[in-house]
Image (cartoon, rainbow, N blue to C red; front, side, top):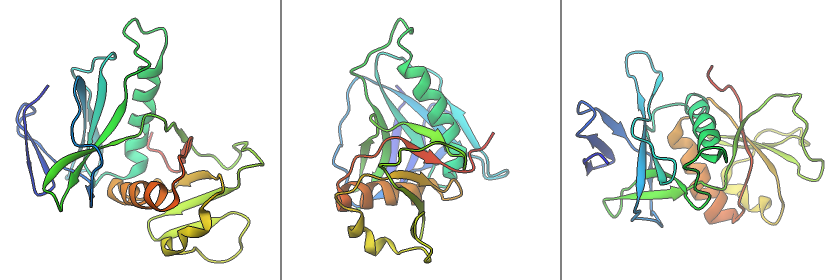
Length: 209
């Protein structure tokens, strides 16, 4: 496991040529300690705007911690999330451990500490308009500035109106154009703290090739 320094939302990697990852920020991380884990790094390339994966040293039997630069778009990160989830869940892998979890690392700014979000139960999938969805679960399209219900012909609703989503199961479709920080804002603040729903699968538009 690599050594790191956590300072003001920046994850400074000591074993990866001193590259920096700007972690997504949260107001309070419920998980602050993890044992027996391997690390995944998804850097942000400032020159090209691309996401760069460094999965070296992953051990399938351990928990996986994903350090993802918040400046990456969700669409560029999603292809790696999908690939690595499939790899970890493969029952043919001799080191497969169904009890291991996946976490995103986040910067808990008020407490100035490193935190983690467990996303083990979420499955990420590419969205296509022709995808067949359950009729019992209406679609909801999520954007940084609000959400849209497919059956509605009105403009997007603000996330301040997210209480209307309580007690109903939806199929969630996230815009791949939003930043990873914006995704974490919605995922952590709206879905679990406000709505209280666990969502899976999560569909993402505009996934990078």
